[in-house]
View 1 (cartoon, rainbow, N blue to C red):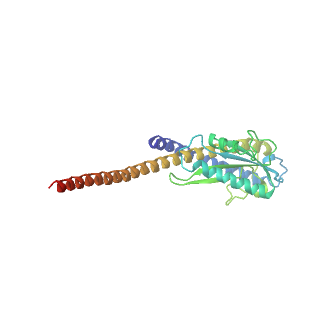
View 2 (view 1 turned 180 degrees about the horizontal axis):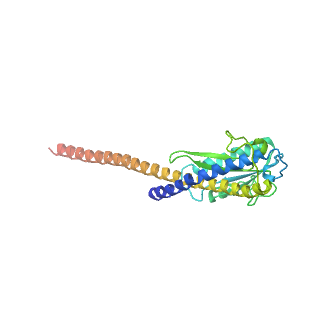
View 3 (view 1 turned 90 degrees about the vertical axis):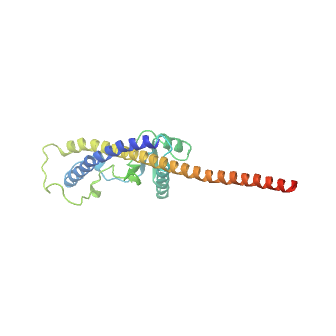
Amino acid sequence: MKLVAAAKVRRAQEAVVSGRPFSETLVEVLYNINEQLQTEDVDVPLTRVHPVRKIALVVVTADRGLCGGFNNNIIKKAEQRIRELSALGIAYTVISVGKKGNSYFQRRPNIPVDRFLEDVDKVELLYTKFVSLLFRLTTNERKLTVERETVRTPTPAFSPILQFEQDPVQILDALLPLYLNSQILRALQESLASEFAARMTAMINATDNAVELRRTLSIVYNRERQAKITGGILEIVAGADALS
């Protein structure tokens, strides 16, 4: 399983690394265009600022186990976020991706779980970000909406004066679905690569533990065997002394 996980994590890592530039550049383009439209009368739902009354938590877990604390860590992250929302009095619903998450939340009747998004003001992605083969980070991505008042770019990527050949609403309507799809795809790719890396690490640790356990049991066995041999020799010597 270690070799299989190592082969899979290599392919998953390549997919994550190759997909990041597109996703990050798309975010920069969308944020810059949206920032330029702050002074114009453009009404796009995903750019509108409104009170948050209900949040959908999309929790990405694995379909299989044997991957260390991968599933437990993201579930703990979700539980922590649920407690925060409950303390703030904000309604929430959970959409679980992955069999392990489905199994966990089905046993928690106090946590509302849905399969489709309806009537929510905000969507948050909870997944495990792939950093390296030995390091992974549970992440709560809260930027699925592009609110104008919260858009801040470190450096302007475009000229401060932009002229749009098409209607800005049409441009945003074309970019926003692509943006959402890229963010969700990136989260799934990051989570899959993290799962394979965690499984490979778990298999390495299991192999090392098995080798150490074998060494310990061999030492115990040899000690017991030596003790029995010594005891048998002492009995023979004692019997010979008694006969002489």
